[in-house]
Length: 256
Ligand SMILES: NC(=O)c1ccc[n+]([C@@H]2O[C@H](COP(=O)([O-])OP(=O)(O)OC[C@H]3O[C@@H](n4cnc5c(N)ncnc54)[C@H](O)[C@@H]3O)[C@@H](O)[C@H]2O)c1
Image (cartoon, rainbow, N blue to C red; front, side, top):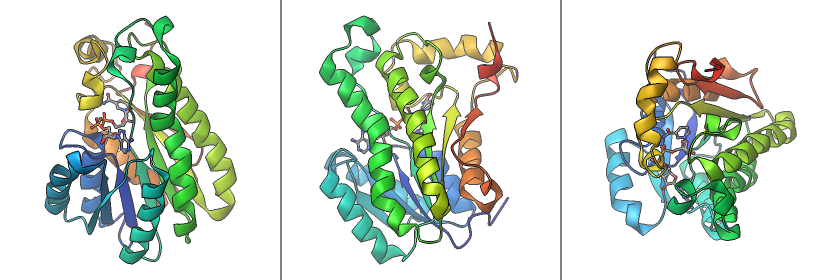
């Protein structure tokens, strides 16, 4: 594969380290010829993400905490310096308090519930509203979701509710942005060992059982999630919007 994203400028939000799904997506975007911009969440991440950005030959690495409207506004301004148009945006961001991914769901407090919704679902709306005006030629916004949005996955709890909200946001955004040729989709990845997955009690431990029940008899490789995002972000995905595409070795079709 090569050149599927040639001539396109892509922004990938959510690289924290080499294990981040966003890192695999960014690598695949570069392989396909995209001009890449990365973001980091606050000073604590700056050095790591700048180093990863160098490895990936990203043209810019910019600060953006999605809960801070002023940082989103500045991001749009900084992006204009990189390129007059933006073609692809990847939102690979989620957060919930660890206790809300460990304790019974019934114990979820108001603050933890709202935090998960703000970072993991509302931020897609904020990102789309801020960056859609820069997508003057149309393009693709893609987010990452998980089966816990529609099925009860042990300890996924408040994040499952946030992912249900995120997937609904995808549909409403797709309907409104379609006339400007901006497509909005979600990729539902099977479990992958990342920092976010480790925050969910027993999630990585339960992966072994999942692999034996998935039709493809294996776990999900982040590189195949990345390739699905390439497809959606490229002209090959031009007819697809408002969708949730599963990249999970087929696990979601199984009844037991
Ligand atoms: N790992 C899995 O099993 C799995 C499966 C399906 C979906 N996902 C989703 O994939 C996405 C990426 O997660 P990951 O597994 O690569 O883990 P990760 O921890 O590497 O990535 C999560 C990212 O969210 C960022 N983030 C959190 N709060 C933020 C904020 N306020 N502003 C800006 N960035 C913020 C973090 O900095 C980090 O880069 C998430 O939406 C996650 O729910 C993960």
